Length: 253
Image 1 (cartoon, rainbow, N blue to C red):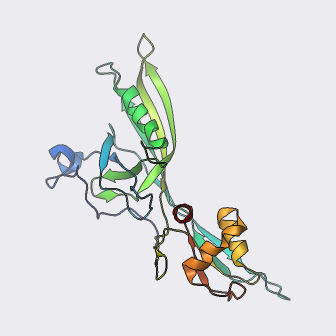
Image 2: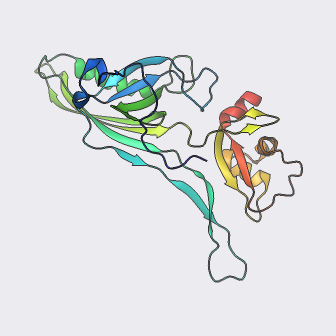
Image 3: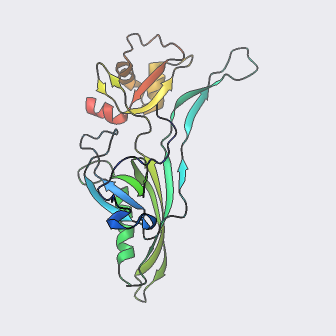
């Protein structure tokens, strides 16, 4: 399992400049931007495609970045005990990054603000033939966020031309991590995109794990195959089960 999600200075971008910021700007003038990439052709979640669609440039760098990461914990009731059992890790929630973008076109009074907002909203719909939205990565100088998608975008227009065209807008965007848990290797099924890691507690069955993960207990065989479980009636408490992503189930059917 990966550690706490933070920004990294690693990674490369076709829009980075060895001499400083983007487009040759000095390091002190680097502008933040969102990089849109094509979803992986196979529909996986391990890494984004190397094909960059375009970028959404920040006119003004954000004043703050809000990063959230949460984990799911459960407690196993202890028989005849006055206190609850110790917390057990049940999986990781995707990381979330929220930020604000400010667009202003009062100098030229053109449609630059409208176009920028439309590009943001285009990140919330499926990309071309893919059933998933484009992958989005936030960059700011040496900072690089996780690969994610824009879950929500809100635009507030605050200034208009006499003809009614917006020339100033404040947008808030919520970026959600594509895959918090990276897939493992299984000798029989190959690479798996992990949706969750479940720690078995007393009373758990493969059917109950499948129902909780997919809403369908009949999909328990996918969990069994991913973990090499030969006897579904014997699940030892404390065992960690890899729960495949739904896309893996779709490919197998």
